[in-house]
Length: 342
Image (cartoon, rainbow, N blue to C red; front, side):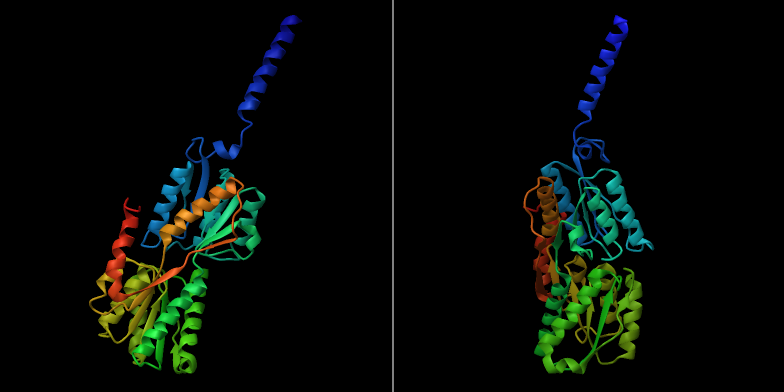
């Protein structure tokens, strides 16, 4: 009988020890790397290119400094089920017991429900690049206000054209995906800014059907060439970001002999612009500080996890850069692709 009691006591002690070992926050111990670091998920639209690469690099560096395990999840621009794929990444983060998720939602409605599910599961959400429909479902938004960024580009373009004495003509737009929230906001902002500066003359300009190329330069080139041929009075093109439209628009302007005659306004710095400066294939850009965005995202998530006070919105302004300033401006931007960020 005494032996039975002794055995039961030993079992009880062992169970207590095991319970004590597993009593810490499971989100600190259960992660993709198997380490004891808390895990954050970072889900951008893509993770390459002059806009996304510095953001990814900054997030990696800051997460390492603060002692987090950072898991990156994204898909190629050509992914046919991109929204569904990224919603799946959100579910993976919840299942993996991540303490926080940073996501660039491509559709404010489609991502809203899954973001709420993450919130209800106790996972803090920070949105960036674009936002979800219900702001209460996420903790904070970090990044550019795309309507205001578009408005700034529209204003600068209108000022430039007015300076050239241009008071009428056709305007084209080219984007990777026209239904993506960032693209619709940029389009709205561009028109608002352009019309605000042009005033009464805005009625003398007409906007052509926007081009969507799914980040394929050959497609935006083909479509814009058709618009140039059909519209001899085409005087300006806006490319709304990414290598496909940026390159395709410049190639179309060049192939049609319209360099310096059709003015090209773009989003975000890329070394690609430098190939078109001498030939007059790019006029000016507005650029986002994506490195600052990446660092701020991790800082905000760290504050949330530490239960410190945060803001609802962390805006990052854009900067207007004319073609003749792009090369010099790019020297500092290029450092964001290397270790020379300090």
